[in-house]
Image (cartoon, rainbow, N blue to C red):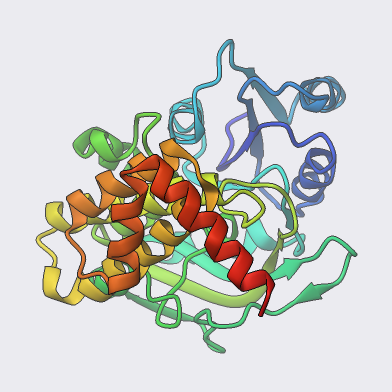
Length: 332
C-alpha cells in the first residue's frame, strides 16, 4: 500500500475509548489508500490488547508500534511521525472520535488544491461523559471556509487567543515533509520529556511555513470528563502542565522574535493560574515548576500570586496558609 494519508494515533491507558477512536478512523470513506499508525506508550491497562486485536483484524490498514518504555507525549508523537509513509498526516487522540466519515477526503482535496497550504483544520464539538455534545464556547469558530497566510496567525497562536484562532490538531491534516523539516530545524521544540504537549509547537511552526486552511464542517468529537494532565481533578498535574506551557510558549516566542510586550498578558494570566493550582495542591514538584516558569517568563503577577509563591518557599507556612484558605472558603 502507498498511502496518501497516515493517521497517527498515540495512546496511553485508554482501554475504554481506543476502540471507538479506531472505529471512527476505519469508517472513513475515501478513493485513496490511508494507513493508521498506532503507537502505544507502554499502557498498563488493557489498551495494548485492544490495539493488538485491531491490528490483527485490519492488517492492511493498521500498523502497530508498541513502545518498550514510556517515551512521553512529544517523543512518542514525533517518533511516530517518522514512521508514517503518507504525503499528508492526520491524527486522532485515543479518547476522541471523528464524527465525519468524509473528513480525510475533504481535507485531501483542500491540500491538493494548493501546494502552499501546509495545514487544514476544521470545526469540532465537545463529547461529554453522558454521550451528549456541545459547541465549544470562547473558541474561534468561523462560519465560512478560509485560506490565509499562516504568518498572520502566529501572534494569536502564541498569545493563546482562542477567540481569534484555535487549531485543534485532531481536526487537522498537514504535510508530512513540512513537519519533518520543522522537527529537524527546531528539534528542541519537538523532543524531550519536559515538553507538555505535541500540538501547540507544531501548529505555531507550521503557521510560519505556509498557508493555513479552515473548513467549518464539524469533524471531531473531543471527549471531556476524562482524566488528563490538564484536568482540574489533579491540581498538581494541571499546575505542572500550565507552567510548562508557559515556558514552551516563551521559548517559541523568543525563537520567532515575537513582541514580548504583546505576550505579557498571556504570561501573567498563565502563571497566576499555575501558581494558584500549585499552591492549592501542596505538591513540591508543582511548586518547583511554577517557580521555574515564573523565572523563565518574568510575568507581572498580582500580589496574591506573589504571596503564594513566597509562602510555597517555606513549607510550614505554606501548609498553614493552604489549610486556612480552605477553611475560610468552606465557611463562606
